[in-house]
Structures are given as structure tokens and as C-alpha cells.
Length: 375
Image (cartoon, rainbow, N blue to C red):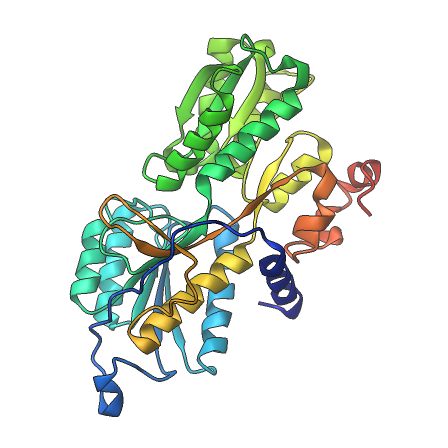
């Protein structure tokens, strides 16, 4: 992570509102083979290997932020001696299962896991633990005997999106107004939480005319879903679109434009992807959800290194606990989120070092940037 991004992440940490959660306990000791005097304490030196399994590469964040930030933080925390073993599952749960086996074979000291399928991965998590490799669930709350977890407040993400959609709809936000919900994949536990949060805000305020659980989060699948919604509801009768992330927002918007709509309904998103930010600038997309990936990535690296070096998680790292479908009281850090609109682009993605104004306001978007005072 570059110096600017590091400063941004630290600033974000310092100003983010506190999340009230129960006090947490420590993770179980690793069963890894130690040698010398450190064996009796369960501790290791800086020469550790951290496995990192990310779920897909279609969302820009994983290769742009998560992987390089985690790698840099591991190096910093181990005086340059720590090693990262990285694999990406490309949205294939079977492949990810094989990748867990690979990490076990490589005898990594700890495994950071962002699950493709949070339930299907439970057996792999158990295999890793049985092999003496603690697993830290990252971004998605994997089932199985995980040792720690960090992510964002996913229900709050859905609420933030729902509230923004109602605000954008204004006087059109009535019980008879029809919206389309483009949720994420059923294999992702976060998608269910986003949906839960959105429904808690939208139910009873508008009519959900069509709702989809979009396979693999793919924009092309969202595009096909939206084409079906347009046929079923009518292009001029869709008053708003809840999209759980920016990629699906893009696919939905493409379908709406192809249907010949002269004025698009407000569309939500998440992840603050560059294309999503540029659609917000032009007005094609109303909002996204800004999440501090530097803070999340640095946190998971701290968790992993602490567990690998000390045999347990330093209790000062985790601020609370969470329960998964199989585990209770998992030490956790939950990172807050921010609604991103035209009004706060400078104070979020630009200030945090995600993108420069030059990257956002290319020749294609310069006039739109000038119009909203983004200079």
C-alpha cells in the first residue's frame, strides 16, 4: 500500500464511528509445529507463511486493494520476513476447496479465507484446522471452526442502500411505486444480509415488483434479470432499482438504456468501483456504498499475523464477536460504511486514495465532473 493510501486508512480508522459489540475472547491456539524454546509458548518468529484465498476477480477491489494491501501489511508486521501464498477461486467453490487443500499441503501457518460459498467451505475449514492451520474469515462469514473474522456491517450496507433509494425517489416513494431488487448470489452470506437490511427499509414503503438473487453476482446475469423485469413490469413503471453492488448496477443500467428509457430511475450500488463512481457523476447511478478496504485488509493481516506468531489472537485487535451458522463468539472487527453520492466523492474515494481526480474525470467524464464541481 502506498504512503497516501496508508495515511488515508489510518485517518479513516481514527474517525470511523465505534461499533458497539460484545467483548471477545481469544482464538484457539494453532497446532502448527514449532521448534526450539518457542515451542513451549506456541509462538513463532517473523518467518511465517500466510495463505490468502480470495473468491473472484470480476470485482475490481480484490486485485486492486485487498491482495496488495494484505501482502504489504504482512511484510510490515514481520519485518519483511513473512511470506504470502495467494490463490483466487474465480467464483468457483469447487476450485476454492481444492485451493484449501493446496494451502494445507504447503503447510501455511494461517489461512485468510474469503469464501465463494460460505456453507460449502465449512469442510475445508475443518480440514485446515485439523492440519493445525487456523482460518481467519475475511469479508464473508464462512462456516466451520474459524478463529477470527473481519468484514463490514452488512445489514447496515443494505439499510444504507435502501434509505438512499427512497431519498432519490423522493415523492415517487409511495406504496404503489414499483421497484426492482437485484440481490447478490445466494452462496454469499453477505448478500443475504444486504437483502435483509434493504428489506427492513423498503418493505411497506414501496412495492417490490420483481426481485432476483443474481447468480455469481455477474453483471451479465443482472442484465438478463433486468430485461425480464422490464418485460414483466414495464420500462416506464420501474420507479427505482435496488442493486446490491456496482457491477450489477452497471448490468441493470445497460438493460434499462437498451429498453429506450429517456430518464433512468435511481439505481443503487456498492463497492465504489471506478465505473460506478463515473456513473454516479453522470447521473446514471444514484449512489454506491463506500467501504474502507484498506482498513479491512490491514485488520485481517493483523489478525492473521497475530495468530500465526503467537498461537492465538491478540485480544486488543478484535473489538467484538459474531456468531456464524456453526460457531459462536468468533472474535471480530466490524468496519463502518458510508453512502457515496455526487456530494461526497472528494471526501471518500479521492481523499482515501482510491482514485485520483484524473482517473475519475477522464475526457469522457470531464464535462460531467465540471457540472457537479468535481475539479
